Length: 256
Image (cartoon, rainbow, N blue to C red; front, side, top):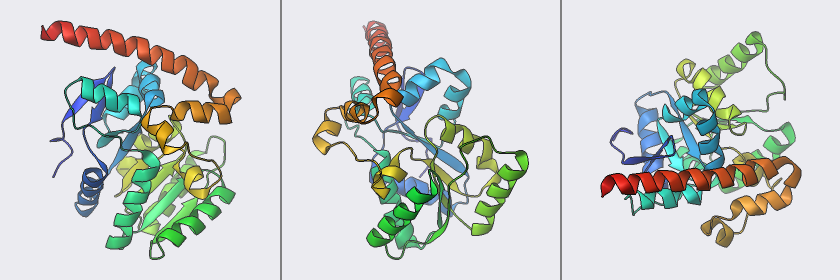
């Protein structure tokens, strides 16, 4: 069971895999059993557009072991490009699915990112759901650039913890840059889960499921934090629609 054998399509410049929660979880587990290092990108429109404008970041996304379609527009894109069985693999739900696997396998897990108070609530909530979850570390790094010494110490702490699955909640694109920089130093699989820490800690509310299914989660979050998120969602979403339509027309013309 390898990641390379998964069907995939490029949405703009981002490679997105056809997968689901069970498939993704089993492949992550197999990678851990094989002592394979690497990271998982959980892609939405924001990530796709960040990669579109930034070649270095684009390469990081496309070097991931697995890139899941977190946003509904990516699911629709996969379907339009022939992968009709495509379904959403949503970061917060994948987090819980992987915690289920980690509990079953007694796999040590580590959480890196967010704020100390958020991590305290996250620990409490996760252990209510998964009393046997083996959490070997939770670290909220400072909101500034770390020195080389500080970075090395944090990586050494993760190594010493014995963690095999590291959830990284630094937000896109910071978490992807962090994972790409450090993955070769860790014998673990890293998951960039974005806002999942806040959602499962209960510090940020999630959109209703009906809004998610319609691809309107962005609008819900925009209403919550308009000043911080307006550019990400309004500008990026409009650019994505235009660029994807151009890509779709080109693909159709080539196939006729």
